[in-house]
Length: 365
Image 1 (cartoon, rainbow, N blue to C red):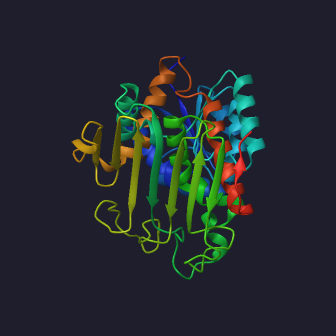
Image 2 (cartoon, helix red, strand yellow):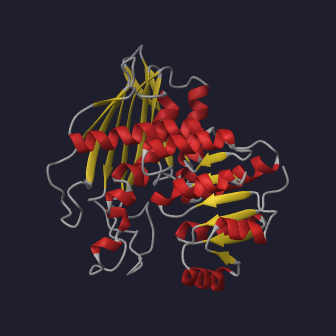
């Protein structure tokens, strides 16, 4: 295909980050789409790009546009993606795919019917440390993986000033933000699927009340998820929003230093029949352990140090993933990962949220 000519659909923080990346990659951006004329004027001044209130308007002015980055609000992904695919554009859509599983399925069908392609932005598994873990798995270092444990602890979601209107905190509105799993836990679900394949049953456990009283009752601030494969292998995912300072707050803005701030934690342990590991993403270390069955012990084989790499490159490499995707398009190869794989991750995430709501196990059909 011709080199990607890109439209931004959305003008939030992700759009600003992607725009910096696109300038660094020297990729042409035709313009952006946002819902209000006032926002068009504001973001045009900020970005220097032409803005439009509809994709049809942008395409009429810039017919060479062939790629769209759907980076608007979660509940708007579905409509924006369908429209872009309907115009035959290649689409990179931010996670989560959509607000309902039926909408996710419709997006996959639309991609199949379009001359464009659909890539969902589940970038964690494609970042540096997870890629290294996948490499070790392919080499057979772990033997057969039998269990895993993942812990993700981050700040809460009240992103504005403490006296802001609760209705403005969209991440805390389940119908808009999607719930605790859809924020970032979905990346860990996607990672666990990459290592274990699909799970057959999930169950989420939460306390009857939240530690943080400004969290709505239907959005837990701490959850423990158990996942089991059909052949009896097991993984756990524990997500904290109640144990760390909030780096998501825009007013007042706080500096971000995940590795140096107690309470922030992202660790993944994989246990196989031959070896195990502890990946400390914020600490930038990968510890590899070997089982010495002869002496009935576990030996620290080595530690791989990733501290020379940028923190985001290790697990949250949106910049690298965007570049690989655009390079893939330029080479005429479409999406990096079929959208059906993202749909399977969404199916797991919806099942976990169903378990949170119902308080019991959910079997994945």
